[in-house]
Image (cartoon, rainbow, N blue to C red):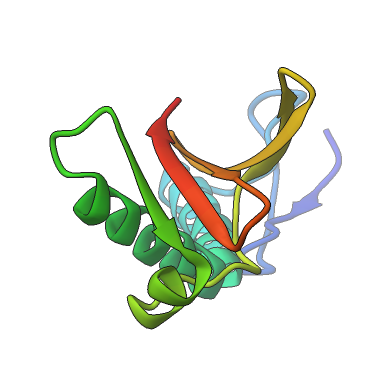
Amino acid sequence: MEKRQDPLTGEEFIPARRNQRFASRENQVRYNNLVAQGKRDAKREVDRVLDMNRTILLRLLGEAKSATHSQEYLAGAGFDFSAFTQVFKVDGGQRISVYDMALKPLGDGRFTITRC
């Protein structure tokens, strides 16, 4: 078999299998952990804002099925209107959601908060 180069360490090795990419299992695990950490690092700031938005909506909703608050009130609570997970149409109206929490604009500067 021909020699290959380990993507993590750069060391040359002779593979024991045709599809072997790493010189050792430890190198494979470490490489995959580094790739996963890079993905988490890239999403960290957006995920922090989304988590904060969801926490604010949960706190404002409490145990109720729905709650209505003004845009100014939500902004004052720290809600960031530029961060949400999806936009969808329901009954001819548009809603934005942050994970499992939905905001329905009422058109007068107020939003109804519900769980999806």
